[in-house]
Length: 211
Image (cartoon, helix red, strand yellow):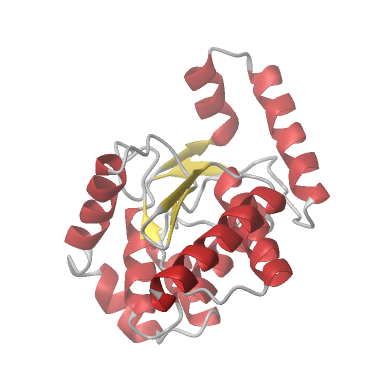
């Protein structure tokens, strides 16, 4: 699963995928991969998301606010609570590095969920290292280890490699899912679409085992 930690569609796509897994009963192991929507942001800085959206799509600030309101409604329909007024955008490489650290402790999913909830629901910063360490600790990571990771260049190469792999697979945005190394799903598809792909992947795997 390729995603960015400040991508509202990624949080939504993750939730829909999880619903499909629960519905189908297909056993999965989720591997989180990093993808930065805008790696050009200087680290440690941020800008209001409404300004970024307005510039990106050539809209007024008021139109950007309406886009945010519509996103909140979509999220609510899937049981997610978004509060996007006042949310900021910034460089997410440090957050992604902590996700890689968490993967080594079996905590990647917990850390990703904590970061999503912090950003989209609680309006907490993912661009300040003190805030990242605190959030990672709340998800179960050792705070001292998280801080030492951020103060080093640990997992920088892994974050970059994830982005390169996504592009090699043809992904131009996120969320992007590759199931069983065979089936690609782009975007926050409906739980029904994810369920269909999961069942197909399970059938193919069972056929391979039988063969």
